[in-house]
Length: 362
Ligand code: NAD
Image (cartoon, rainbow, N blue to C red; front, side, top):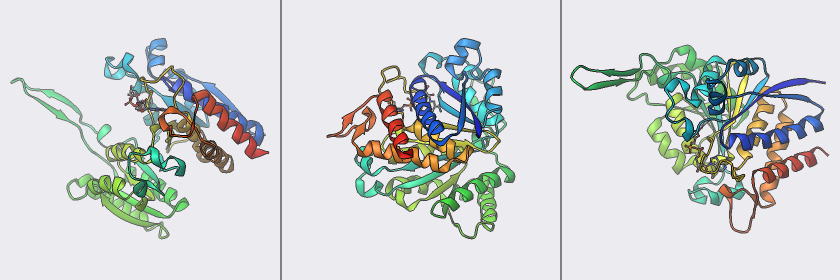
């Protein structure tokens, strides 16, 4: 029997509520498919700071590095907002991404037919939206040196961040994006600001070079400001989008609106040996502990984990089909509630999906 080890890091807030539901679904998959999935939990984020003083204790890092995949919840919350920068919960996630070399973040944004009216955008705009944003995750403005605030003797100050990319960093994320596009509708939009930024000019040059190895994928270059408009005006024009870290951070949140709720969106961070899967949303302190969080983003993240890290594509498809079935039957958590549907909480939604997954194997 194949054995896979999965590191489970629920983190803070609703991470503690949605990850157990994703595990419930993975346990059904393991049982029904005859795959041995071994789960081991680790501390991360605010809870880890409280317990050990560190947002990513060494024991958690070791657990992640020796696992086949990581299922992550979310970290942070008002309790730790005033902590010094290196003791903030999100440092744990940033360190994990950097040390595991998770340089490509994959975020699908799909509009589920039965949730079209949950989107603030018009039905005629969002209907049929099915895109994937591939965001470079370990370079660019968020990591470039020098950075910092320089205080002058006259009381003024100067803040500096540096946007820097090497051709190697651009090439490797471009290859991930072309590979993703190849498995989808074979269209790739590379987003940059080449009319102003030299970094973007290099980005465009390298992506164009990589395209020669993918003659079956149609590449277009689009400026980030234009892309921001097109995403909410004509989202169906996109299939796969690839972009650098900062642009990707903003555009992928914008794309989240197309799916109706943050509670529906999974993500994968890939690159190094061990990939990390997490819902796009944060710890939702406003609803944490009340049992109303939508676990679907976490459950769909578990499906991505099966597909990308464990080569269990058909099992991932069963989870995705089960989510659709439960939504078709009219069950909704509060964030996606519509008239005439049945309101359920986090645990009930997890159980409904787990039961549908089991039914799909029989
Ligand atoms: P958030 O995603 O936690 O919440 C935004 C809004 O969406 C809230 O109203 C919340 O109730 C709702 N929401 C989010 N997920 C939901 C779900 N599954 N079901 C139902 N409703 C859901 O973003 P925020 O409020 O900006 O951040 C809260 C905390 O989370 C902050 O400390 C932030 O730093 C952290 N955060 C962490 C991550 C991460 O760990 N990757 C990502 C984003 C934010």
